Image (cartoon, rainbow, N blue to C red; front, top):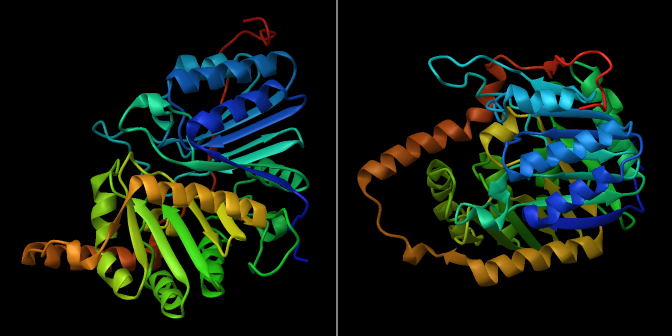
Length: 400
């Protein structure tokens, strides 16, 4: 068995903020010794404020806490919010903080996009949900549809070791610190591996896991992804699977939070549909999911989209799962989306495109398709963290 692969884990799929946020806040309230939170975004809304409150309460009872955010995604967090954490002893880290230029954020590339929570050695949560109100239905039509996984069992200690290493090293992704699972083949139930993408020695691990699973699929591939524009080899693997008789269904954005995301994805529709791939657009609310299930057994949940940013630039983390019960649960959730909230895209239903759109689409397609290869020539960001110091007086921990 490969290093880092664990079995006999208890797994639970969490859908949207309605399931994810209560789970996170509950385990933090029960924390005894250590809490580590990594996330792309914290907003100072109802959700972000409740996260702050449970973290502060845990720190006051002596729990050691680290919070890491991305300098781009959490650029607007206030000094008062950060001080409320650091004043009680919470270590607050910012990945690649950069000043604004002419009012614009400059740290666009190489984002720390992981979403991981680890509490003690008891539970780890990994997924794509940020700490913001727009992951709750009460936000309205713009509320995002997304998922996370809660893990209890041997995998927690190894995920914890990874995030601890990420805090202590410029590049905590060398050698065996990354939990690798090179094949989705037969394994005991509850089998879990954390697979990450970085700008060091694991630049394409998540994509490789996807492609191996797709190429070895026997019956069915069901994939939901918010920002879908993978490279040609990934697309070819999907078409080849469909051509050999595997049912391939993709759930993509129909009501995107960023219209460009849907625009570039639609350029792939003809190629995929002509090869037998079924495409469904989720039209109830913006899709933010990054999940897949194959043959009701192999699954993945995480932060990685299937676009050039996630596949070539960002720091990402996905959990790969081999568990039949979990796979069935995920499949049932996704089929509910298809049956009740999606429109199937058919070649005959698409309007004839104007020549200008065809030309623009061709240019954008070929640029983005090759972007992951070109990205290696861009300056690569190591995990440069800035730890924010508290301005509170010494001895103030737990007194505020």
